[in-house]
Image (cartoon, rainbow, N blue to C red; front, side):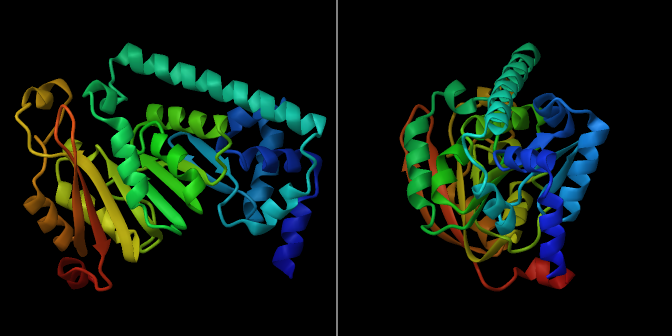
Length: 314
């Protein structure tokens, strides 16, 4: 009862209700929230601290910033928000300002990518069949998936696609510029059940067995140690959870290694099966997706028992 009373008290203030309404639509840093609400940073920081302490918001550090969002399982927060009138003029103005801010941040991030010469849309750059890849991923995503992790989420395109199909989805990426574009995408479409955060795919800041499914789309050929990356992805899957990996099959386009900084010229089924097995997963099927370059979608399922290498450390 004390926790419930504390949460109700934390929410019972106009500015904090506005903050909750905004952070239910996406992740915002303090600077963003100051720009939307037109209030000072010290004032909003105090409000945010109260909301975080009450469990109505979660705080995710990222470099010098921290992002605030309503947790996916914050039932009371969403019950309170459901009582707010959609046509409230102040809340509507906040939503419009947040959309404008997201669009501006997306433009700035995109321009930064162009100035730096970074290639953030690799599927388009390699002329891969994006629609066919996305359709295959969505078809193989287990029905009833509650928690999805997208590793190497990039601009958040997959999160946008899976949002209606899952309870909640988290995208992780090492690039802040990518995450800026992903956050703008999620905010623009009001995908409140999706979030992104900065993370190293070798050391995910996530608990064991916390997800029903994980995806890695066009990520593995960039990493130095695919086996370690797959083992870390498997670690955060619950027993029976599904890992979906989309990447290039072996190909003769060795110029890609230099032009696009690929570490690997594709992967064969035997290597993938071996890495899955070492990570404690059972291979569950392979699909070929025709295109200019050969693309495959590998599916694996997390076994109930821990892999031997992990068990020895414990």
